[in-house]
Amino acid sequence: MGGALLLGAAVGVLYDAFRILRVRLPSPLLGGVLDLLFWLAVTVGLFVYAVWAGNGEVRIYMVLSVLGGAVGYFLLFSRGILKLGYLLADLAALLWGIVTLPLRAGARLCKKIGKTQKKFFHYRCKWYKIRAIPSEMEDLRRRAQAAQGGGSHENTRSEERRVGKECTGSGV
Image 1: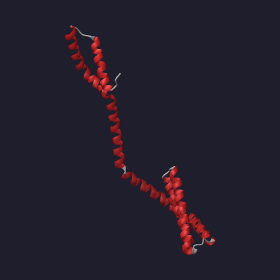
Image 2 (image 1 turned 45 degrees about the horizontal axis):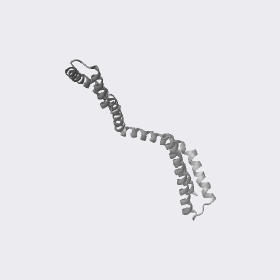
Image 3 (image 1 turned 180 degrees about the vertical axis):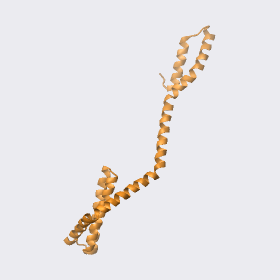
Image 4 (image 1 turned 90 degrees about the horizontal axis):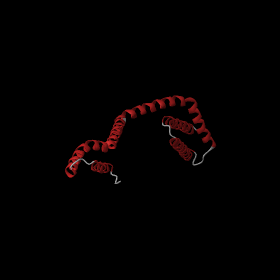
């Protein structure tokens, strides 16, 4: 009967440990997984205890003793264990934050670099046009003057369209 009381107290400790995880790591999926693990552990524990102490038979006094051990744990020790567990969980979260600080800083830096590169890539063609057109326009003006004896506005426009198509990659 004492073993069943200890098993009940162990069930209570496991329940409180899962409660701490559920509160400190809020996730809808985690709740279901922890419930499943809790009931699997309780079932296995009760089965192993029944095989060991009751020759494979689950007796009513075993179940009542396990229940009494769990109730006793919750009445006497649960509050203190929960406070200690939350304190340890907060300490673990603080240590995890310190350990992962370089990774988070690196991720922020990569994100900032990516945004800067995206802006650079977006305005690349406009920069090309601003830098390239004055020299190309001068060449066009010279060619037009040499061929026709004066400046031709039509040739200049067609050359600007050609440069714009090269930059954007459109064939239209």
